[in-house]
Image 1: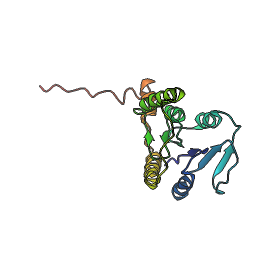
Image 2: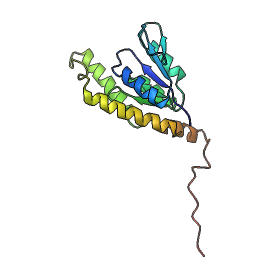
Image 3: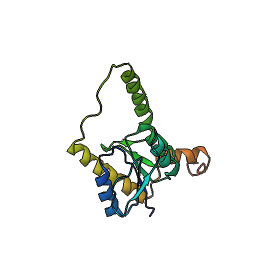
Image 4: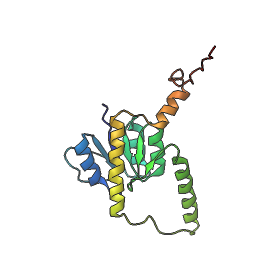
Length: 178
């Protein structure tokens, strides 16, 4: 049974303690990546990267493997994690999927454009107890899927397009009855 690594994009992540709790219970290693030092439990690895836009994201994206789980609210990082064959969860428990990431990226770009013109203000809604509960459920589900060895849709699509499973995914021939 493969054990996924849980990568946490830790700057401004409100669910670090929940990640630690789930990881301890399931035996998954946790890699926290931040641009400043922060306290983490002794069984968690902290990597402090240089300050700068996307430095932590780049570090995570370069290391995520198929089956790993990335916790982030950064949609481009979630996209990169999915392309690497990993899973990506937002802090509210929203699972990014290959079929939903395109719309999420488009919405992010639209909101960024509207904010630049002053059309939209504010930020995300305050983090709630329901968000925390939804996140815990989603992380548990993601860990269990990864431990069962279920490969992500993105990885399966890459492998079939590369011809790795071409014979396994051919439709069966219908026999003609005589």
